[in-house]
Image (cartoon, rainbow, N blue to C red):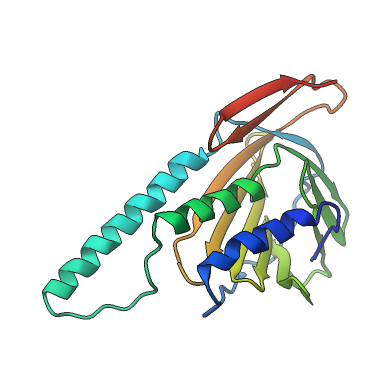
Length: 229
C-alpha cells in the first residue's frame, strides 16, 4: 500500500497530534482470517449521514468504557488484587483522539478506481488510499511514515497504518450484496492508550455531475450543508 503525497500535511498534522500519547509499546497486527475474494467497488460514493456514526456519540461511548474500567481497577485495588493494563486515558487524551478521528474521517465523497492488481480510493479533501496486490491477500510497505499494510480479508478491503509517532489507523471497506452501499469502518488507536475510537460510515452512489450541494459534520458545528458551484 502506498499513500498519495497529495495533501500530505494532513498526515503530518495527525503525527503532531499523536505525540501527546507517548512512545510505542506493542503494535497492532492486522489478521487476515479469510481467503481473499475481491469485489468490485468502482464508482463515485457520497456519505449517508443518517446511517453513519456520530463522532460525538462514539467519543461518549469510549468515555463510558474508560469510566467503567477505572471503577473496576479501583475495586481491585481496594481488594488488594493486582491488574494488568495500560494507563487509562484522561479527558485531554480523549479529546486529542477525537480530533485525530475527525481529521481522518472527514471525507464525505469517495471515488474508487479498481482493476485486478490495484485499487485506489480517492477521498475528498484527504489523501488517497492505494493498494497494489498480487493475489496473496496482503501487501506491506515500510517508509518514513511507518508500516503500511493492505489487502483483502475475504470480501473486505483493509488498510492499516502504523505511524512512527505511535498512532494506528485501520480502514475496512466492504460493499453490501443486498443494497448498493459501501461501508467504511475506521479505527483510530494509540499505542499508549488502547481504547480505539471506531467510526462506521455508509456511502451511497452518486453522479458527480449532478450533485449540487455538499455536507460536512464536525464535533463543534454538527452537520453543515452548502451549495456547490
